[in-house]
Amino acid sequence: MNFTRWSARLPGTQRRAAGRTGRGSVPAARGEYEQRPDPDPDPDPEPVTDVPALEDLSLREILGGLPALVALLYGPEHRVAYVNDAYAAAFGPRRLGATAAASCPELAELGLFPLLDQVLRSGKPRTVKSRKVQVRGRQKDQAREHGKEQTAKGQTAKGQAAKGQAAKGQGREQTDAGAQEGSYTVTCTPVDCQGSGGVLVFAADVTDHAEAADRLRTSERGHRRTAVTLQRSLLPQELEQPDDLRVAATYQPGGEDAAVGGDWYDVITLGAGRTALVIGDVMGRGVRAAAVMGQLRTAVRAYARLDLPPHEVLQLLDGLAAEIDASQIATCVYAVHDPNEGRLVYASAGHLPILVRAEDGSVQRAADPTGPPLGTGGWLHSSGSIPLPPGSTAVLYTDGLVERRGEDIDEGVASLERALSGAKGSPQVVCDRLIRSQGVTADHDDDVAVLVLQHPSRTGPDAELFHNAALDLLGGIEAAPRARAFAMGVLASWRFPVELRDLGVLATSELVANSLQHGTPPMRLRLRRTDRRLIIEVTDGDDHLPRRRRAEPADEAGRGISIVATIASSWGSRRTPGGGKAVWCEFALPH
Image (cartoon, rainbow, N blue to C red; front, side):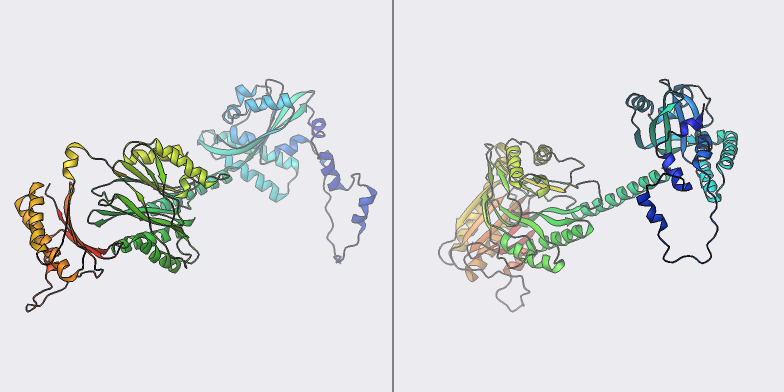
């Protein structure tokens, strides 16, 4: 085989050779650039060593000294015409004339045989990137060092070929040293091999790059796991389950990077059967957004304990968000459910609307009021309400569930409404169905948080565990004995133990007496039982909240709230929306 004749057909060979020797055909118009005098000539220039012309070297000498792996195959059966020393060092010597299928299993492992056929048929080069193959032990590294040493020493092509033969012999001696995996980028180029079609296989070792990329991906996965763990640790580990509601939530981090978002949700029991529900989203991604989210979630729980109206909670959060980080803003919905009213009272700071599905499948979208996001300041938030009757389901969610690139977000909300109208089952089942319906997968590009609450419609034995009774406190001090008698009759009808009935009547007496002495009409006593607790609540028209204090031995008053706090499981007070206050206490029912 005449490699010298074939080497002349390498594209660009003559042009590069002419550039080195100065014998190329350069147009006269371009020659003037070579004649331009040097602005800073070297007074003692070193002599220029003659560089051999490329035509004086055989292709075998050139390819033999390359650190890359080179193989020449010819004919439709891809018979081996030549492999260079680096190839032999990596995979062992190959018998010339044998088919590649029989003598080159590494080409099959690289998946190159279909590619070789395509190159022969089309006459166009093809490249595959970073494919892995087993190489012979340390020969991969030796072949790489072999090329580096010869390049550094500036040896002639003949010397490089001879050293390649030595490396090949050394590779034969270490065949049994074991195999290791290497990665190669392979280019298959069509050539004319002695009048028949051939393919030149050129494989560049990219093992170091592939290993570095694998290490980087492993490191990124580790960072992502850490970030997701941080994000999840800032979310509720276990949702509180109110007496009157069934609640479930789902959080799914977005994308494959470590930059988790700031989505959060929470369920907070407020006492007297009331429940606060919150969902929010800190703009941006990364640990900073998650840290801001954690601070806001903690603040929401603290403000919720004050039992403030939803808009006042958001007002406090707005100022806090600006203090935490003026560059971070967040959207949030804070809602409160009162089983006595059958409604969700809510306030929104730039968040998406709450959706409520009625028992018949119709879906209602919570209307305004909606203020700007938290952290913007200068806005007075207000509260709104939406019915939540028995049998209905409400959904609170972040924008990752409905926002898609190239689509209006209202279309996403409308799509979620359609999915919710047909979503039945437990709250967790509804969560999963809504996420699937919106096409949210593991590689979704944004975090998603969904909070679903159901107000179940109870019938049969379950309905017997939930009762309400109320009495308007009319008149003066004579209302106190009427309240005690009412409480005694109601608690007896609910078949409570005698001890619990006595404690309930005592708590009723103290709360009513406190309201009669310090409150103003209208006054009302409400008793409520659930499957887990007895709730006693007294409302009046005065908005001064009582507080527990230590009464001196000589004091004739001031012990009512202390008595209630001592005998009850918990107690509290709050201002009511229309003015006035409510004071309540709870007793845990025996199992």
